[in-house]
Each structure stands twice: as structure tokens, then as C-alpha cells.
Amino acid sequence: MDWQQTAALAVVAITAGGFLWRALRPRKITFQSQSGCGCTPASGAKGSITIVGRKGERATVHVKMQ
Image (cartoon, rainbow, N blue to C red; front, side, top):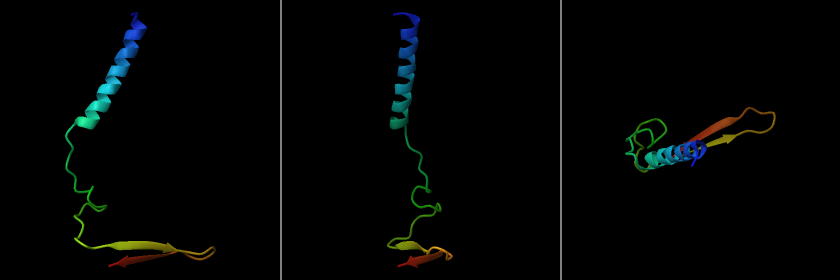
């Protein structure tokens, strides 16, 4: 093998090692992944956001919490 093949195999090995490390490393616990604001979601609370607007009119946002 000449130096170019060795360099190419080194790049491939480093890339594969990076992908494996990313897949197998321990995960950090973040509370932001549970909800968008970082707080824990209320049990059973469901909501919906609807944006309504017509051409030439101002859009309105309707938030419905159930």
C-alpha cells in the first residue's frame, strides 16, 4: 500500500469511529426534550394551535386547551 491508500483508510476509520461513538455514547438527560419550554408536560393536557387567515386579512391564532 502506498501512502495515499493509508491516508484514505485512516480517514474512513476516523469517520466510522465518529459515527460509532455518536451512536453508542451515553445520553445526557435534558428536560427540554420533554416539552418545548423545558418544563414537564401536564398529564392529560392536550392543546391545539390553529392559525386562520384569508388573503388580504390579518391572520388570527386560536389556542385551544382541553
